[in-house]
Structure formats: structure tokens, C-alpha cells
Amino acid sequence: MIEKLLKAHFVHEHEKTPPKLRDLVRLSSFLGIEFSEDQLHLMEQINDFYLEARYPEQKLEFYKLCNKECRENYFKQILDLFQWLKLNLKY
Image (cartoon, rainbow, N blue to C red; front, top):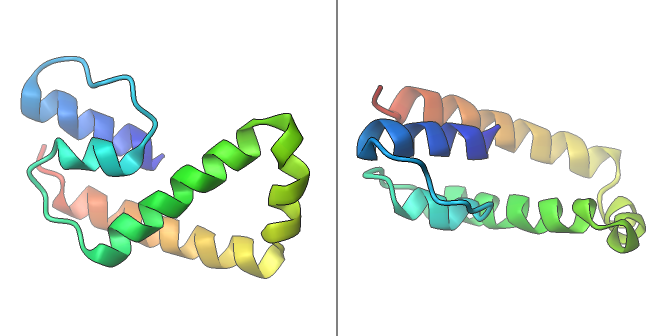
């Protein structure tokens, strides 16, 4: 959902198709928004989790690393980032 918001803002700002990237930090660099270090760090972690969860051989390791408490914590942080993006992206 973060990726989609970033790409929607890219389309609005640049009036062209966004780059075919999944790297949230790189996507955010194309936008005229200043992100905090914490937000950029969270986007780096989301990138890592996406890659780890996507590939079957790494799924088990991902599940071992991210227990229920971990998931709830990241879910809250991601939701906070999502809300912040909605407020700060100019449409």
C-alpha cells in the first residue's frame, strides 16, 4: 500500500508512468517530499521484508524473525506512515 501511494503521487507530480521499482526509498527520492530518517529506515525494512517474504526459500526465515509482536509493531508503523503519506502527498 505504501508503494502504491508513492507511485500515485509520482504520476500526479510527473504526469508519466512511475518507474518499475519496488524499492520504496528510491521511489520516495523522486518525490518532492522530505522524509524523516525514521521513515526512510522503515521503508528500508519494508523492502527487506518484501524480498524475504516473496521468495519461498526465505519465507521460513522470515517467519522465524517476525513473530506476532513484531508483526503488530510493524503493522502500526506502516499504518502510521500510510496516514502520514496521505496527509502529505499533494493531489
